[in-house]
Amino acid sequence: MTSFRSFRAVAPVSKAVAAIVFVASGSAFAQSITMASTTSTEQSGLFGYLLPEFKKASGLDIKVVALGTGQALDMARRGDADVLFVHDQVAEEKFVADGWGVKRYPVMYNDFILIGPKNDPASTKGKDIVQALQRLAATNGNFISRGDKSGTHAAELRYWKLAGAEATKGSGYKECGCGMGPALNIAASSGAYVLADRGTWLNFKNRADLAILVEGDTKLFNQYGVMVVNPAKHPHVKVQDAQKFVDWVVSPVGQQAIAGYKIGGEQLFFPNATQ
Picture 1 (cartoon, rainbow, N blue to C red):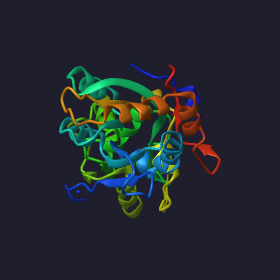
Picture 2 (tube, rainbow, N blue to C red; picture 1 turned 60 degrees about the vertical axis):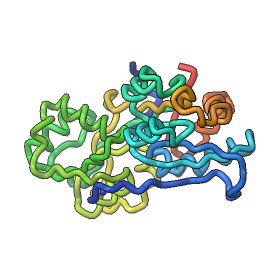
Picture 3 (cartoon, helix red, strand yellow; picture 1 turned 135 degrees about the vertical axis):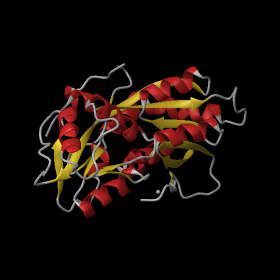
Picture 4 (tube, helix red, strand yellow; picture 1 turned 180 degrees about the vertical axis):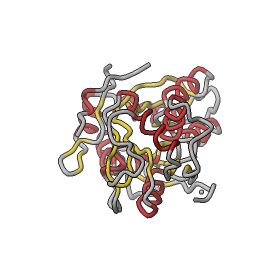
């Protein structure tokens, strides 16, 4: 198993997407903020572990709407969220530069991995994601793409471009327009390849004949960031409470809480707010 610590930070089948909502407390009347985030942070189980800790520290509830990163950013642009917790650094920095966010803070990282059938019919196994995608394109290997403008989808498209297969991914390439968990389910049921974040994979139970085939490539580094939505664009944003969450999650206490989330003794996310 590749250690995430070796990485360093670098500068619906339907088109309808169902938002997954998680509330940190059972009280419907508690003071709360809305966070637009990724399906990977929710489906990995991180928020089920992390947000109750924030509730204890602050008294605040957080309602999480889990979407692809692109959709989460759009939600924030509409003023439907107070804070963002996502993983597409280029899009996040543009969001702030365009005035939609107050400031972007790095929070944590893990990595992407290529998942596929254990017998690996396209011979992708190794540490080179570009070479693996080239083999998938050449053999018309079955590949399930998120196709949902998420951070994982954006990363996947970057890798196809690096592989010189941006327009020729092969006849086995299919987009599901879905979250990470559903994409993994489709891959498991159809014996296909899929790019996933390690956190969701570790929390995924329906693995069937799937296994990790490509890991350890530095290009697979997966950084997460957090931002308060700019009240200059949407005056109703709960800035002070949203900033409380940001301050907590990048503090030593919040960072320790992230590091403490494990499945089967394996750490899913690695805090790096101080880097």
